[in-house]
Image: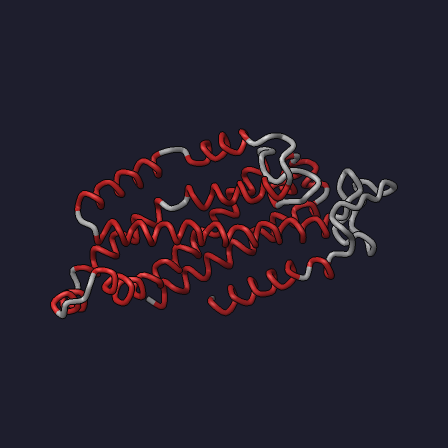
Length: 265
C-alpha cells in the first residue's frame, strides 16, 4: 500500500508541477466558439460554459491546492508540536490551560469560523491573497487536534526510563526536549501531517463549493466541483467529474500512507 500510495502521489505531483508544459492551454484562455464542448482530440476533457479547457484548469487548480495544503499542514503541525511539548514540560497549570484551549478550539464549528473570517475579505481581493489567507487560516486553526495527541505522547515519554536517566544525569530541560523528546515525537507528527493534508484539501474544496474559495479566473478544486451541484448535468456529462476523481485519488493515497504506517507500527 505504501508503494502504491507513494507512486500515485509522485505521479500526480509530477503532472501538476509540469502543468505549464502538460496543460494544453492557459487556464484562462477562452474558446468562445466552443462553449460546453464535449471531450475531443482538441479538448480532452471538453470546455466549460466560458469555453475554457477543463483539463488545463484542473491541472492548474489542483497544483495550487496541493502546494498550499501541505504548507498549511506544516504550520498546524509545527504549532501542535511546539505547544504540546511546552504544555507537557512546563507543569500542570500550563498543561491544563493548553488542554482547555484545545478543547475550546475543537468544540467550535471551525468551518463556520473560517467561513466568517474568509467572508470578511474584500470581494476584489486578489487570487494570491485569497489562497494564502484560506490556507493560512486552515494552518492556524488546525493545531488543536494534533496538539492533544502530541501532549499525550509527551506525558508518556516524560515517565519513561530514558528520560528519567537523562534527568538523573543532569540533562537540562532544553536539551531534554531537543535530544530526547522531539526525535521520538517526529513519527507521530508525521502521521498527523498525513492526516491533516487531506482534511485541508477537503476544507478548501468546501469553501470553493460555497463560493468563498479562490476567486475566478484562477481555478481551484472547489470551484470546479461546483459544477457537480447540477446532478442531471453531471450524469449527462460525466467528464466534468474528473476533478472529483483526481481529488479522490489524492486523498485516498494519503489515507493509504497512514494505514501503511499504522500496519508497520
